[in-house]
Amino acid sequence: MLSDRDIHSYLSKEIVIHPYSESNLTPLGYNLSPSDFVFSLQEKDLILEKDGYYHIKPHDTVLVLTKESVWISKKIAGTFHSKVGVVSNGFGHISTTLDPNWNGPLLISINNPTKMELKLPVDKTFITLIFYKLRTPSSKDHDNVSSRKDILKSISDKILEKDLSDSQRNFIAKTNTIFNDQNISQEFSEKVRSISTESKKPIINAIKRSRVKFGLNVIKYYGLSALCIILILVTTLRIIIHFKPIKMLEFLLVLDQATVVALITIVIGLLYITKPIKEEIK
Image (cartoon, rainbow, N blue to C red; front, side, top):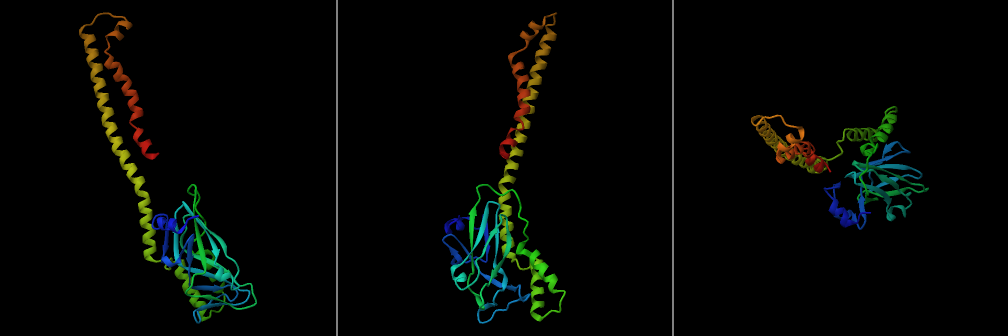
């Protein structure tokens, strides 16, 4: 689990929260706020704010889109937990997960299992997000759509089959902005893009370094190869100039040690030339 100090150190690196408020940071998590998108599954309609509260009817479940957009890398995961101040008023507990590499607002469901009408404050946080550092980065991408647009689209399609009230038209308009990602602020998107660019820099730099080393090794290799060829030619000319029938053993004795070393260098050079690329990739 990440403490408040851990979360601070990961902000704009492995975690992005926007808008971010220091007052929402807890010793071991971050409290999220409801946006003006609070949808009643019972009424099939948006619940409008009244006197600073969203009034949730008995036995109703509401879908709340968070005011904050969240991005986490593949090295981070999360879980959502109810706040005591919320569930002690009668709301059902909240428990779900945040997959690695999530990007966007969050859709949270809240249930009123009581026979009373419950009030959800507009200007107070209602859920706590706990972050975790994964031992190894996740290998799979989550299959959940940002803002759970798939769920909202399914609901809006059913509503479109009926005669629409003004508030339902408002719901359709809001869901359309969600489908078009217009509810994700430009600042949040830019932060995520900048982190993505920064994360690629080490790989790009490694490739550049490997190319430079590769180029230098090519020069070294061909330089050594040229030297080896010269040594072989010189040795061959010596044999031709002092030509006389010689046995194989005598021929080998005529070859300079440098020529033998040169031949070995050509073979070793073939392996050496690709070494920097392998090192940088590691």
